Amino acid sequence: EPEVTQTPSHQVTQMGQEVILRCVPISNHLYFYWYRQILGQKVEFLVSFYNNEISEKSEIFDDQFSVERPDGSNFTLKIRSTKLEDSAMYFCASRGQGLEELFFGEGSRLTVL
Amino acid sequence: GESVGLHLPTLSVQEGDNSIINCAYSNSASDYFIWYKQESGKGPQFIIDIRSNMDKRQGQRVTVLLNKTVKHLSLQIAATQPGDSAVYFCAENIGDYNQGGKLIFGQGTELSVKP
Image (cartoon, rainbow over the protein chains, first blue to last red):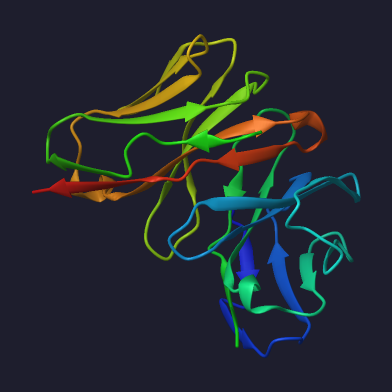
């Protein structure tokens, strides 16, 4: 069964450092998303990406965050200068055309010290 | 504002019983709703979805009911099994789903199944 894959599974970084989280969506999907989940809390929307541009973003997704789809297969989330409150599980998701199921990856756990 | 919330944070049921997990949403313009299951340390897993032009949809052992009048969504799990133990989230789509849209998740209900 096709799946969304994410790397790294866990990253520990110092406050102020840049972090890049990587995702390989399902190959024929057109819509791409990043969500995050602080431990014990709900899943929060960060950004959606379609047709090579951001289509929606939340208040969390400020100018410290950016996304890229550099090569037609990877979808990355960059945090330029991490803060302690960025510590969370970050989920990538993708889906195909129409009202189709959103497939989530297993997540990348970010710990900011 | 936009919010999706759950009435019960935890639910404990006996194996074999039916489970009902409830969810309230606040955005009357939401057109698409999904239930997700999340096991510990894993990503959300799709269970069932429903469009706003429907009030009921059935899957294998699961049924989703949508009451737009009171903005209420429920997930019914028949013959609950230990493998159903997880946190269950409802989510509503806000925005144009054909342009990406965004799913807003509720707080989650932890379902615990006792053998």
